[in-house]
Each structure stands twice: as C-alpha cells, then as structure tokens.
Amino acid sequence: MAGKLYVVGTPIGNLEDFSPRAVRILSEVDFIAAEDTRVTMKLLNHFEIKAELISYYEHNKKEKGPQIIDRLLGGQTCAIVTDAGMPAVSDPGEDLVRLAHENGVAVESVPGPSAFVTALSISGMPSGRFCFEGFLPVEKVERRKRLDELKTEQRTVIFYEAPHKLLTTLGDLLTAFGDREIALAKELTKLHETVLRTTLSGAKDYFSENAPKGEYVLIINGASPETKTYTLEEAVAIAQKLMDDGESTSAAAKEAAAVSGIKKGEIYSALMKR
Image 1 (cartoon, rainbow, N blue to C red):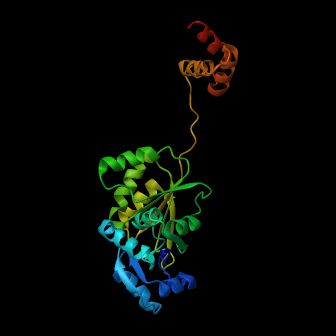
Image 2: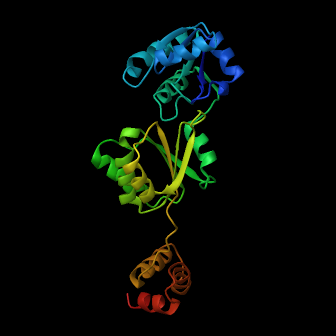
C-alpha cells in the first residue's frame, strides 16, 4: 500500500506560528523533503524533531522527485517543506505534488502561513479579487511581456521581490502600469514587520533614497475599468455576427446599439447598404 505525501506549512518568521499538528506530522513521517536542509534543520532542532532530512529544490527536483515517489509507493510517508510558508505555491514542491497524484499517492495538506496572504490581509488594499504572480521573469523580453499582459488586470496584483531587484522592478511596474497605489510589506510576523502604503512613483522615490532591506511582497491596485469606445464599423460587425447567428436585421441592430452606444438607425442603415 502506498504511503502519503504531507504538504506542511512552516513559519514565515515567527516560530509561534508553527502549528501543533505540523510538529506532530514532522515527528511521525519517515522522512522530510526540504528546500534547504540547513534552514529546516534549525526548525527541527528548535522543536526537538528527529527525522531523516533530504534536499528537494529547483535544481535537483527532476532527480529527487522520482526517488521520493518510489519511497512513497513502497509505503513510506514524507513531508515536504519549504524554507518559509506553504510548499507547492510558487515553489518546486508543485512538481512533487503533481507526481504524487499521477502515481496514485495520497496528498494531505497541513496548512500554515503564506507570505502573500499575510501581506494582503494587512495591506488595506482591495482583497475580494486578486491574482498572485510570484516573482517576475528575470529576462527583459519575458518580463515586458508579462507586465504587458497584466496592465489591464482589474484585480489586485501581488508580486514577490528581492531587495536588490526592488528598485528596478518598481521602475518597470511604473512604466507598464502607470502611477497606481501600492503596499509593500516586509519582515512579516517578525519584530520589524512593516507595511508601506504609497504609489509606485512614491515607492520608487523612497527606495532611491532608502536602500531596500529584506524580502518584499508588492500589492498593487488593479487597473481601472475602461469604457470601450466603438466605431460604427465595429457596431456593424457586432450586428452582422448576430445576423449570422439567425437574428433579424432590426433585432441585430438593436442589440448592437445597446452594446456599442451607436444609434440603432445608423447601424441598420449601414447593414442595409451591404
């Protein structure tokens, strides 16, 4: 009988956020797959957890993933952890979870803190609808393409960024998005937890004078809804599509007028001249 893969959340700063269930699971599993074994060893030592520890990260996942699955298929249990937060979210643990499902291995969540959710909850930014983007691509063409895709996104947009790249990223965001509201959160759950509410231009100016320190979560207001302005040609095309679907000329002109704001008579007249 196959074993089980536990996806275990670890503290993003404050060790008091580590749940009793997480401590128990890490104490009971046959082995733990960790992003950085040195970081995880400190956590295990703090909670007096004795367990076999193996490394599983971006650059060895193709080799280690199948090895872990083989052990799980043999009946062992494994917990996967990342250095901080929930594994498998913007993290190579995603690949291991997928492999487990593909091989019929049960996967169970042991939830814990998540940096982007924690940051959003204290940011004061709109949280009803949001999209999490993680880190932007490093390569300039891919980065520009990603930002171009997101510039009309109306939901709150969330990124991660390292301190040495923050100023460049703020400049890229300002160029792509215009000057929007932003909240920058760092040192989450730690002694010097900070949330800076400003604009993209204000953040760029601030960090030009104050060197960024720590990992940042960037929470940016979504794009404002835009009212599309239709031309007569576009309105006629809408009506023609409706007619192709079986609508009468009059009904199609009426519906196209409601969508486009162009007068029904103008649309009808243009249709009759075709």
